[in-house]
Length: 343
Image (cartoon, rainbow, N blue to C red; front, side, top):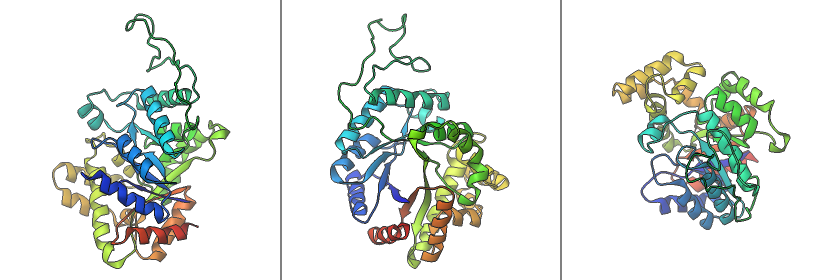
């Protein structure tokens, strides 16, 4: 099991990146760089490539709507070259609030678009002349544009023709697509005890169509990490309020992907309560209404014996990358300790 974390948001990206440099020395294997409506991920990933030596650097995620598929492929190839083959292309649909509200692009056909983006990216990395018909027409067909477009291939020779693609997926169709076509899956919150009943059918359907050369699907899972007594209460509150934000506020009623998964994990009534309270402006009450069992089982907060039990449960559920957000006065020391437990 590998160890991963996310680059922290903030107005001082250099300071946040330097913290990752320290975590690499403590044993961190992968860092994920988010791109919501914040600083772009690509700039930060390039900086991390220059400042680290062995760390894998993943986009977590690049939204499929905000770049053309070929630009996404070019970007991944460039970052892979700069990092010496350490790039992971994390893709996802994001959500309508960000895509339509910030980018001004219609949020449509996310699963079909993801499939086409993957196909186009792999054509580019193989240095094929890119030709594609579908939601994305490359080159533009006759009657559109100037008529001067022609199939082109990437000028550069990529470091790798099989840059790993990971997909942030929550819905059944997207999870099935991920298990079929991607090297890895970013499922957001993993409740290992409910993994099979929530996602098993979709994973099985995708795996049945999976090419052998892709290997076993890699999966992240974990959560906020706190093993020091004086850090645990604060970490639990952070987890509680962050969970309320995603389950209650990341979307509208009837259109919140995180809330839907929460329902499917066995918390249908609680999901409605959290969302109603949160959207009515009662954020503290929403956070307090979250089930203690859910919070405990979707985090790594507690004494070492408890955290080791949770790691074992995640491993049993198929998680290959323990994803942590360390809350500590000495994150490097805590991360180093957890790294030992994974050996």
